Picture 1 (cartoon, helix red, strand yellow):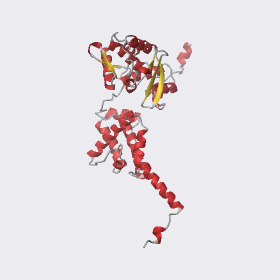
Picture 2: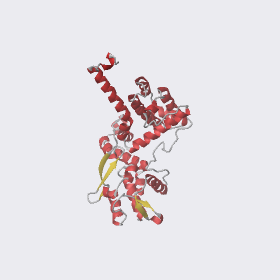
Picture 3: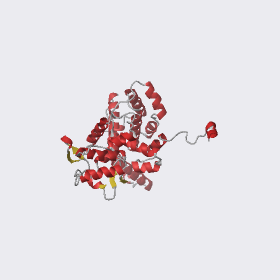
Length: 345
């Protein structure tokens, strides 16, 4: 016999609550997937690397979890104490302060989603969110005291390029590879393109009739058009007029022996290696594509480019980075008048 309680219909408030719980459950099932679908491929690669190191740290402490980038339940054993210990562990291992701060931000982002999925309690997430990284001033003091300042492939400081060195890097031999290299260095030094943006360029992106370059910035999911600089236009015309420019497909062609060019499509690794080689030929050790982007932004800031224009041209998602370039190139005592200088006037 069915009880009266079992056949009583739900009250309106109970129905609404049930619907809400079902909606929460449905959202939780796709929370990670939805978040990752909105991020650029470069961001996902970096986050996956961050979480892989966090996973390694947890295993060192006897905690076995699932895929932290995909599975909410993998975050159940994570506490604020473990996140705090992860930060300290990286510091002792010699990781760069900037990398530590970025990894902490990644852990916080995914722990927030885990909290929304019910794998971490709101109270625990609040404590995780309170874990702090290191400020720039703290970084300087810490690096002065610890024996191992950084590990990994990234350099602590960019290679500084002078204006004369930049000019020389854009002047390459009149050979198939030399003409390609000249165009490559112009795109890096005169337009500040990232290495991934350069390898994705196609022959159709180069509009020589109008003197423009159309390209996509995957890091910020944005398409842009740059007016070609004088040197870039000259290098592009030489690349085309000598028959090096592909009819279709990728813009930059691979290297072959004897200064010849192969099929279209240089890889990021090939571009990185080529830039390093061209730098070594000028006596510049360890030159990278990002060093060239740093030169471009520094040069633009030094010559009076405002932060908003630099942000737009450089494809940054915020003003933080362009403002840093501008602040670093400002004359700190500009406008200061001293008594002795007044008397001389």
